[in-house]
Length: 290
Length: 259
Image (cartoon, rainbow over all chains, first blue to last red; front, side, top):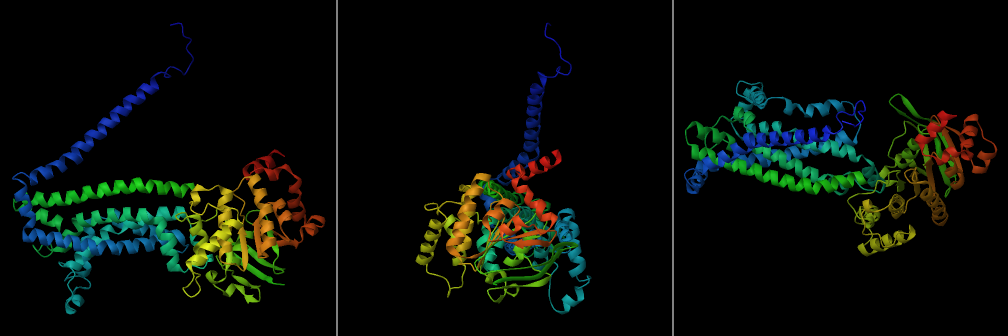
């Protein structure tokens, strides 16, 4: 070779090759991983549900206990999601727009449901509100049922989905700062008007996105709800719990039919999320352009 | 005297931002608060705007106990360094905001608001841009929208927080001349925060030089130029003739190190 070797240039030609090899390997690994662990189970769910034809799957969904589970799940989500949206906006507003003592404590407390196992959170509610719990006898005297009833299921769901909205909004609202709100005050707007006309429009896409995630989790929650529900068929069984009951009864078509409904919900959420992200990207760009 | 500030002090935690500031200025005056960063000038302006609360001290303006009036009732037109325009609203909506949020009994009719917006767009020389969004405007245009928005509420006082700080030197000079002309036309009492000596001396009727939360000197630009009251003022003004003022702050620091 007549080329003069300069020390340290030995790798000059290869880095790009290496790079593309690594890139292809990484892509293949991720694709295989996604196919094996995410796509395959999803396909199995649908194929199992439709094993004996669409008619039987639909019949399993129309069955009264299944209908009651679907209604309960929708009801729980309809209560839990608005509660957490309200809380999430309040917390994000407080944390991003005001300075107060204990702010960082509040920020980390919001994360507790992410770090605690859902089963434990369910157990905590049983210990507090159950018959043998702290408030058990008082609640029984007042004739209020929380555990093994709708309120318990809602509480457990609220706990588990607690951080979704706040976590999504805090970084965005912190990034946007308080200038616009201050400008609105100096222009004579009241607090409520500032929220409706300045703050809310600036966070609406992020908020929608958070609501979708929160809703998906609220409908799909199993662990915490399982502990507090009591598994009463047609009464306190949510969709995920009903799937388990059917599966344990060897009613595979029914189990997978309900599971398919939940999976469909997840897919719809994903599509909406992708649409929002596409929309929301422009908005984020505007935030930074500003 | 119309604007009377008496021993205003403010602490952030243990850091004293303002250390008993007092001054007076007549109605319609153009006052510049001049000082280095951390001198308390922005804090003083924000107290005047009701966005910050004084720990002690009094302010009377136009015969009113100014600090007892909530920010939203002061009708103080505040202009921010980073414009703080409502990014999801058009320019016209931004300008109309202060009129549209009034209570029903005081709100002008739609047609009246539209007419006011047109008038203000004309005043800030942005005719035809009412339908644009803030992100579609240049920095100088945004700041003029911010001014129009502040003027829309017929402010009793205009408070400008380094309004040209984010603009390049050429635009800054143009806007400076334009702002002074605007002030002469409207006659609104104006308080203007800047760290640019040249800007303060060229624009204002009165310049208050702040340092470490205190006013070192207040007077007309000519007074301050002729007889600086302290070594700090003299040194701070010396920079005017220096090339440093034309450089952005990071370069200024570099230049200081090179000395």
